[in-house]
Length: 565
Image (tube, rainbow, N blue to C red; front, top):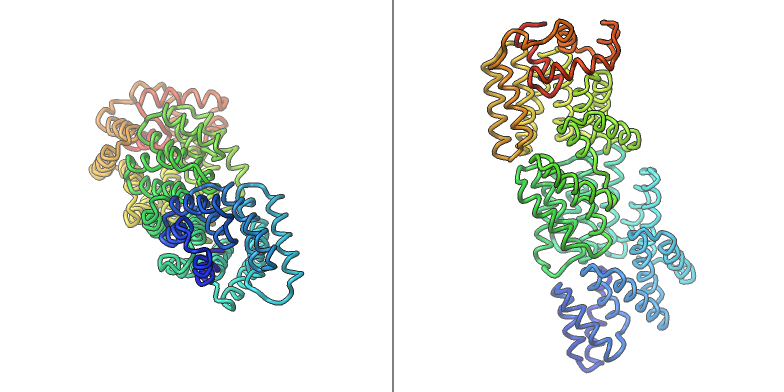
């Protein structure tokens, strides 16, 4: 590993003197030290054509290829270095090469080839006997398997053993790779604060340039992924800033830039810079496709593009972006379902969300989707499923202890309470969500919450506050370019100013509206009026059209504002 390269400095210098200071070779070594990856790769390759490189130089050639996203050249260089170390009976160095070859194959999805190289490394170590730092590196595939199976307690213990090995041999790369995985295990075990404290230590090591380039990139990308899984916006922002600065210092680097741009795009999306988010996501998908990590990021880059287009109301562009995300292995939910809801394709939205929630079992992953599920279930009047989703979201939020999740939970609970007619509960939860989203600088989420607060205030006859809240929400949506949300707010404001009589509702439609406003589901209404659920749905479509609203929540607000309940 590159951490061990630091121990090579004297050896490499001696080799340069022995070889008469070959210009290409010297240039390659200097460029490698300067993190000028393209120049390093070209120089080493040129020197290699003149005379086969020594094992240490082959490793640097391979690592330069990695940073350029040239995974085949990376593995090929390491294989040659492995054989060179074997030829001179340097077993620990050969083990190190075998490990990183296996690691590359593992992350490229070629598990059998990866396992073969790990087994080869293990066999070499057994023949060597004694203790060495490479034994700690071979604990990495073991902890990856353990944590991949959900055995986080055992994975934590394995990572701890590796960290202790790294400390014993003063190998910072191994120490901080292992501690990063310890943090992941703690967070997956629900010990979020402990995990985040360890994450902060890892960040300090990464930003202090204590780690080799490849390990620095792995630590950045892994840790951001861990924090994203826990919905910790603050840590994701801070780590992404650090990753961005690291990438900008290495303009020739390809390997981690694509993933960095995706993380930047996601942060910009949350922070309201939608144009910047779109550009960064497009750059990631178009320019940085080399290397396994960038290929994994490509689907997320297209999904982020889809989200920007959806929020702007650019549905054709969103459709294509979601399709590309799916083709690159990224599930385009919940964005696609939310777009279908906005388009009025309610059945499609419901079917997609039910399918996706049925497939998704990891609590933190479900937490990121449950708010959209609640929104869609409320739109179709299934209060039972909305309530159940809120309860589940609340339990996950308690276990993860995360601000963003608390805001999502409070928003979902508040919207559900509004649909049930529990206005005081709704306002309490919505005000809490509003405060958190403001603190996290998430303007779109702030505007969404304020629009629901406006509906709730209208339902308790506080029309002045309702108008203030909805006008503020509309202003934010306009600044962001959220065209569908602007149209929705305009519709809600028109309901307040254009109410006249029952707006042409039939007696049966008025009955249905009153029952909807009291929190009844379609099934409850059908049973109470002795009609089919299909008939109830048809009445609701007519009611929405006559009132110029698009959801049960808005219809409920109308009913309360006109004292129909």
